[in-house]
Length: 384
Image (cartoon, rainbow, N blue to C red; front, side):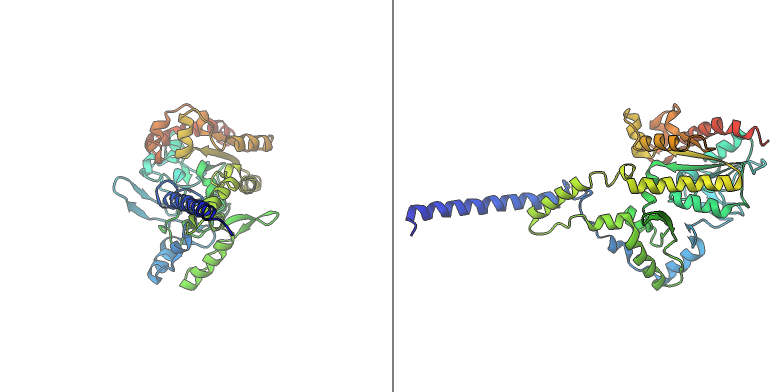
């Protein structure tokens, strides 16, 4: 039997271990519940809570004004919206209305809201300024929240009816996040686009198109089926399933969070993700294939998003620069013209509506147009 002194020593040791464990558990609990870790990328979010079935009224209104089976969503032709400090309208084709009364058919533009001109008027978009510089109407087929995949599909649908001699595909640097996403709330973590389903490229050993999961938009059952497909393929949803759900014992979850952070160190930077880059390559190849089939010059423009632009301001490399350099090398000898906005001198702090936040300001729109005008003007000399 243990002596009384030995028992006392073991009791003290045991109590000390319990106290240390309780302190460590408390520290882990505080870390998870405080701002220290609460917003970190390794913390699980309840994305399914964003996917509550929409009302029938919302389904009906979205089908009439927004939903598109092929590309996910498009603005309807001949629409007008007054959004307070800016206004927008579309023409009878569904492109953004161009105020200049000049001939068209030479240049068109595809992309996301940076191309469409979110937060600026019809006469303040870069396609408008480019129209003025080239003295030809630049058709603006940009659309809010589009990924490059949707832009390429819209171009494909528009051909040959809306063919132009030069086609600009503008990619905002953050758009790479969208090419691995087929239900927008899974990416944005909000339900602002409750019916925001879209087609995407998937890779089952070979890249292929996954059609829009929302093939019908009539009932809540259609929504549920689209959600089922999205949960199977959406990168952000699948990544979230690997994240840590904070619960007791918190110390163990903290260790799991550390393991996740080490395993997925570049999960949020898809320019370091081979699968994402393979899909982007696939889209560039699709763009070039359409150019060959319809005899136009493809122009690919990279525009830095606010986060990348801030890196540029700090003299740091853009996240996409290595990809762009490798893509230029891969496409050397083709008709593709690849442009990088930051290769032109401008004032980064003035580029967005607010310093490094939001969409391009009128100043930023002019910067984009000036770069494109310089690159496209020689391309048009042979067709005018």
